[in-house]
Length: 464
Image 1 (cartoon, helix red, strand yellow):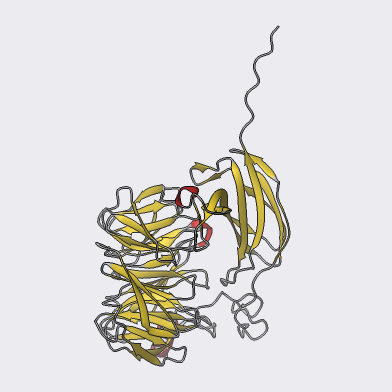
Image 2: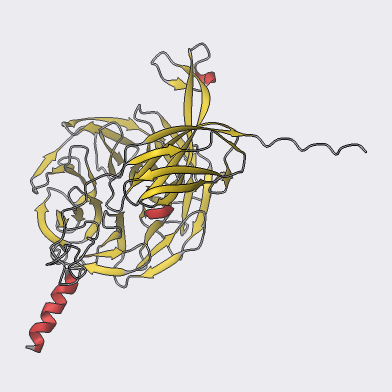
């Protein structure tokens, strides 16, 4: 009888949550791919898309039921990173370039050549451009295929990249044991030393970042602070990492055939259930409480279900009330109402943002500075020097984001006069306010305007 109880306890631990929980995360499907997978992303069509090694059959579409469709495009060779762009296209990185295609026509990809590029992961930045890292550079690619490269301060060997909650981009610098930050305008945003060479990183709540380190470590820090908290995850060699709707980071452990779940405050648990020797490497958040994990060694992709926000209510901690049956997943986005803020602020001074939330949520305020522009022949609003005779227009440049914790009901939140270490300069601004709840549901954006004025000159001493 004692041995049976021990076996049951071990099974409960492998399923990550206590035995009383009925919807614990679990591996519930493993699906074959034609080639070894690289990276994975949720597409705008609700399917999961995987990049794979090779010249042919190097893009796979995985439907929610696990059906795999393979594609070959002449414009794509040995793709690496993949992300759904703001234009509804899938964007992939490869040697010396990027490519993009519509989910409805994967074979009709279009390639953008960027000589000398060795990109890895690709993300959508706060400015709605595509961003990747390559060697000692950050690379910005617009959906119109305009490419701009920025040198990263001290950057040597870029690996993973993430869009931080503060509105900056952050790259894991494998060659220099650090994370390097950059604003969307190309201004350095800090260097953050680590104990060892970082692989990938993910943005979490309240501007926090989590970084996987091959020496069996996941590090967490919140810019601009350089105070790093290291969490030991023995014998895991973590690589890919994401922040999921259950409010935790998940990292793929190649040598252990497991995933690590790490909460933002440092609690660690493990999920097993993958085939032996399968080699989990990268992962993405799917729809309906799923994670999708690439299994590099066995040429497969796995589906994990039950990754949802922790249930609340009665029922002995399982949140169902009464008998402990978990409630349905939270799919309701928070609502923002009664928004007000000062019309003007002085440089360096703070103000109060007042709003009402339908539920507790993380409030993000993105600052975009209004600048003069000129229309090009194609209708784009650019700097005046690029279209001297074009029609006047207003353009907006993102300078960063402030994040605040909001409670259900009325809130009075402080808008600081600085973003990171940078004082918000005088000018006119467009503010975009959004709220995201613990399940990852985002509100409709609310737009407001703000004028930041210069400090008044000091009065001359009165003559006696």
